[in-house]
Length: 442
Image (cartoon, rainbow, N blue to C red; front, side, top):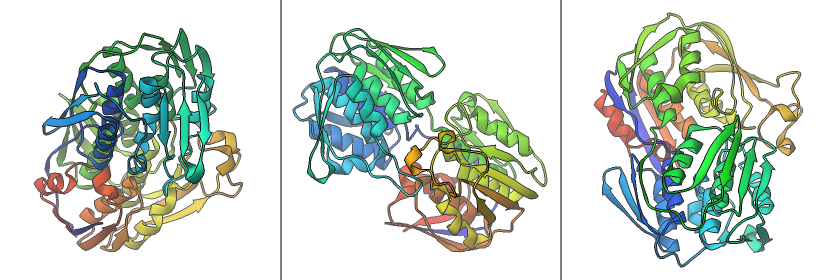
């Protein structure tokens, strides 16, 4: 359990350096299961999800070692197990052990990952694709799954019912050694998926996007070769740092920020009156309207406005805009729980059910849709934040509370029983302290 004590109200300035992507780093390491050769990965974030993947790889027989602060060598030459530890599955990205382990051994045993407070993360979309490849799934007691798949999966064309980031990556990994050609339709387009595709192609796979949301995998013979590759920077952390800079008057430069990864986010900032300039992978805010304009935003799958940007943008609107803004959440059915905590610092909002939309409009499973569900919020601004004690329920909610505490004058306490903030942001206390923040982790 972590507790953060913040003495807020100080103006921060300096350079914030973005780490490797939380949603890419563990997956690159997992991809090493498809080769017996050594793999070297750079810009790997030292986060709990990464360490869970490392521990799981080690339990399968891999040798994993950090050779520099954020560089890792993985040797999967001697894989002797196919069972993924239960602890590893507490990290969402670990679900892609299914595809990678099946590609390597034709067999995997695991417990499905649990959902969290922002919405359920069912793996039905993954498993339907695995079955289409020829996989056989056996359910045992306590939700334990055992899956078998041929060494060379069948050729096929498979269409995902709805967008699934990790489901796309699972099917890619499971299909690398197929007998001919696999086509994945309605496949996720997130940059973390492309980072994985680049990694696998550099290892000898034949994967390419042939049309929007369509991926072609030409089967190759097992196994792949080794690789040395660099993970992409974290677009969520970069966006967080830009929001903090805007709330602090634009005095924070954001290093390792790639404009292509942040295009929809910076478009939204520009719409409300925050202008961002990129030069040499450093993002700087050049203009801030006072007050910010209101806006309407609907979250969407990539290349739309991503759901993980929604909490921090909501916070910015509450703090600096004048009037009513509307945020419509399409990706997770219970994303708004964090607002109950932000209410303690003064955030004013009204949840409501958007009209004229059916279950098919949303990316969560149709079975989770409620005809009166609160899938949108009206945010009122501006707000003078006051210090408070809040409880973190998920990664993005936790960082939202931390940003609010940095702005609110006085002592703010954030209780983080499951270490969500540190799970999503590498060395966050140290990075903020370097900017002048008065923050302690207990």
